[in-house]
Amino acid sequence: MASLEQTRQLVTEIPGPGSLELNKRRAAAVSHGVGITLPVFVARAGGGIIEDVDGNRLIDLGSGIAVTTIGNSSPRVVEAVRAQVADFTHTCFMVTPYESYVAVAEELNRITPGSGEKRSVLFNSGAEAVENAIKAARSYTRKPAVVAFDHAYHGRTNMAMALTAKSMPYKSGFGPFAPEIYRAPMSYPYRDGLLDKELATDGELAAARAISVFEKQVGAANLAAVIIEPIQGEGGFIVPAEGFLPALLDWCRRNDVVFIADEVQSGFARTGAMFACEHEGIEPDLICTAKGIADGLPLSAVTGRAEIMDAPHGSGLGGTFGGNPVACAAALATIETIESDGLLARAKEIERLITERLLRLQAADDRIGDVRGRGAMIAVELVKSGTADPDPELTQKLSTAAHAAGVLILTCGMFGNVIRLLPPLTISDELLVEGLDIIAEILGNL
Ligand SMILES: Cc1ncc(COP(=O)(O)O)c(C=O)c1O
Image 1 (spheres, rainbow, N blue to C red):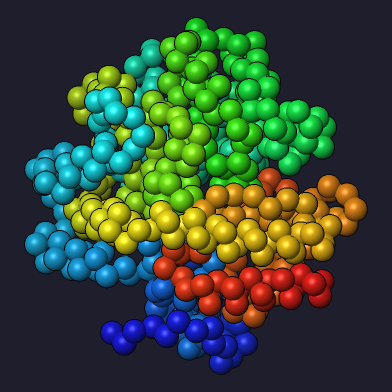
Image 2 (cartoon, rainbow, N blue to C red; image 1 turned 45 degrees about the vertical axis):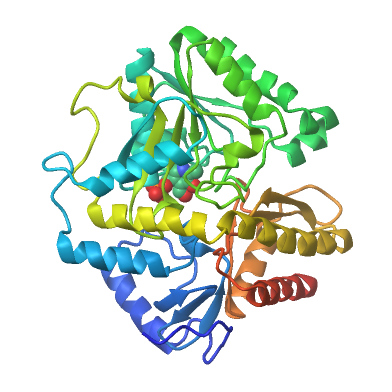
């Protein structure tokens, strides 16, 4: 395959005629329950570019929602997948196992924080990892309740929906939801700071507010697990105040409650560390991973303390496709690529490039309420001028205009007013800067 030129190029309107045609087929054949951010049909992708069926080349600031962190069709992954497909595509690990599943578990046990004995189990999606982390925590503690946080997103299966905070579009009309789920206030420095400056900077204070919910509304005797995204994803890339996560973990340890870090979006080098919880120096009991784990092949995992992971009875965990050999080959190549190509350092460089630019923009535009995030996971929260009121309309206009100009950005946030930037770590500085210039110019004209 000819290499994909790393320049933005628009040869038609966005979406072009080829995409419009395919979109008609999509509308006739695919459930309308599947929303589409940008109806441009993809022909190829790699580096920092997505090329569509009309020959347009878009700057990729989304990575397929934080998945292709090491770049689409990354060379080691392509080679490993080709070799594995030629050997065998599936046997089911629960029937006749194969080495690559074990090797992925060994690698996950090695690269996740914590030096104690660990175990891993593999699944297909982030939601499945979350479901199974809860199963392990309940088996281990023999308690029923789970606490999740305001603004949380944990997926679309029944338990994951129950843990997710936002009603539309994730939950509305899909209940009843799994019982015994409680919700605690998140540390959200930007919005907490509007009420109480100390709460915005003192993570322990914000943790005390959440712990009061654990103690008064649930009770430690009933609580199996606290699940939290160390940096919230769909909720708006909310980075909790320093000290928040360690204080929660400390409370969990003292109360026989399993602390689950959902690193589905924030894991695998995205934030400049292999896992976002490393920025706070914490060692969660269990970690859920997915998205960036296998460069786009469907794979997820739960990794954690051996005594918790071994608590479920034999055959209590698993699934037909979990830890598929092709996905395992891709995961091993992904981990090797992150480590050999210095991608943690690259994520930090990207953080510097993006935040410097966005902070300059913010200084001149009071509609940028907050700039936050780590590594190649940075967000801008847009508000109405002179206030902190969320501005979802401005966010939508900015996103639509960026798409028309050939820059793929995503939105998020409980109030729909956050632009999130998730470039692949293989994007060139030139493309990244061009993408940021275009976003800045559009915002200036809105
Ligand atoms: C933090 C987090 N947890 C879980 C999920 C669900 O993952 P999946 O869509 O693979 O089921 C997501 C997906 O966006 C996520 O961001």
